[in-house]
Amino acid sequence: MEFFIDSADISEIQKAHAMGLVDGVTTNPTLIKKANRDHEQTIREISGLIPGPISVETLSETADGMVAEADIYLKWGKNIVIKVIMTPEGMKAVRILSERGVRTNVTLVFTPAQALIAAKAGATYVSPFVGRLDDIGQAGMGIIEQIRQIFDNYSFKTKILVASVRNPIHILDAALIGADVATVPPATLMQLFKHPLTDSGVQAFLQDAKAWQTA
Ligand code: G3P
Image (tube, rainbow, N blue to C red; front, side, top):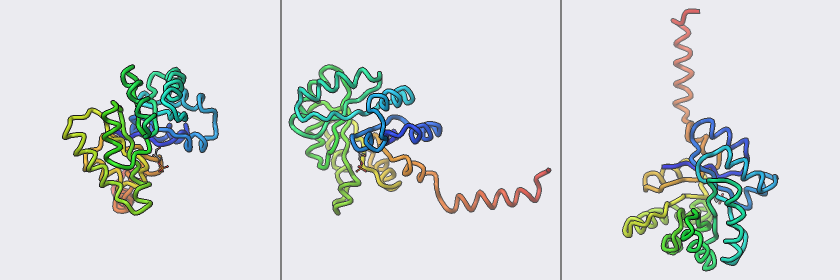
C-alpha cells in the first residue's frame, strides 16, 4: 500500500518524508488555502522534494478549461498528476488527458458507480472520500470494498486512492480491503506509530537497562 500525504504544508511533508513514509502528495484548493502560499511555488517545491506523484487540482468546470489548466500544471514538475472533479465534463477531461498519457486523479468520489465511470474514462486514480461519508452516517469503507470488487471484476488498472482519511482505522481497513493508496493527513500518519504498551515497554526496558549498563 502506498502512503500519500494529504497536505500542501512543506514542513509537514518534509517531516513525514524524513521517516521514509511518503510515496506521493495530494493537494486540493482547501489545502492550498491553508498553506497560505503561492500555488505554483508550493507545488514546484513539493514536486522537487517528493519524487512520487503530486496531485494538483483543476478548478475549471469545463473539460476544455481543465485540460488548459493541466497544460500549465504539468510544467510545474515531472511528477504532476492532474486532479479532476467527478462530473461529466471532468470525465471528458480525463479521457483527453489519459489519451495524452497524462496521469489523472478523479476526486470527490462518493459512490462505486462514480468510481466505475472514472475507471472507464481512464483515470489513473480515483479518490473516494471515506471520512466525509462517515461524517454523514454512511459507511465510507463499504464503498471501498465495492470499488475493489468492481475494479478486480474487470481488471481495471485504475488505482483506489482512499481519501478523506480521519484516523488509523481508515488506513488499516483500506489495507485489509486492498486499496492501492491512502492519502493521509500528517498527524494521522504519526498516529500509526503510537501504542501505550509500546511507550510503557520502552520506558521499562530503559529503566531496567540502567541496572546493568556500564557508565
Ligand atoms: O484531499 C482530498 C481529501 O483527502 C479531503 O479530505 O478531510 O477534506 O474530507 P477532507
